Length: 351
Image 1 (cartoon, helix red, strand yellow):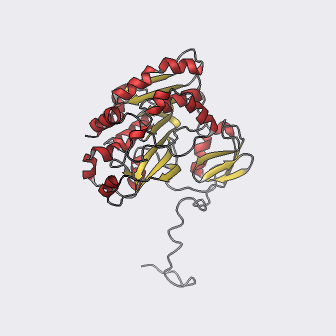
Image 2 (cartoon, helix red, strand yellow):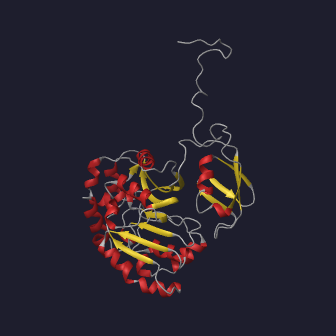
Image 3 (cartoon, rainbow, N blue to C red):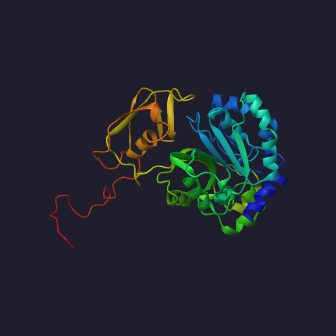
């Protein structure tokens, strides 16, 4: 039912973003000026059929090869097209013919608008649950993005696994989607409006973490989140008190990431050289790295900067030669800290 309902809802039921019944498939955060400028360069018809829930524009993508899962009418693809430049590329995959028709109709218009000798955008019709059937090159993409689409598919594990295979080592899946505070009852998936509004297919956040790690993304990083307002009384009644958040995550394909944030005494200094992020670099919601300051980080964060496209923008201090336990304030504390068997000076005995 999922794929058929998605095609019908986004191809026939909705004629524009103003037809949505909730704010789940809307982007509330204001884009930074460079992204806003790129957005205003996108054709009005493409922007009118935008149904994303976040900003899927990661930093430092000049020259990158990007795959957009569920690219719709092409707004994110055309924004990213400008940021990767003529040496980069953006490939959009979508299953809705009406959306793809809008995206493809304006390929030449955008090429001329951006001043490119050739278009660096391609759109492919296909189901993101079955990416292996599309002949996309494995280990090729620097970045994979997706904007409020993974919730619409039934086999989410297949999407995460395929994304991991298609990424280069050091690449990332940078995507926005809707998450629930508990598992949504399966029978709600049969409601075409709840599904089309990105609610009934939303993952419980705990299940998302498990799926991401099973696919090989060992340390999911939350970038931004916001609670969703369910303004339609009928929809709210059907949901029975479940609350939802729109969230943007980044998942890195990196070897050696650990289950916890481990402390090796490492630090970085950001050079302030990423365009649009000169003052500070936002790795995730807990790591805003101000330019010029020495910034202590855990081993996983070190790898996310040192073993990716971000490396030229940082100085690195330390290595992995000495371990100091879990990084303070990041990850889990010691499991022994709150348990006391007896007096601190009691003699040791076995069971």
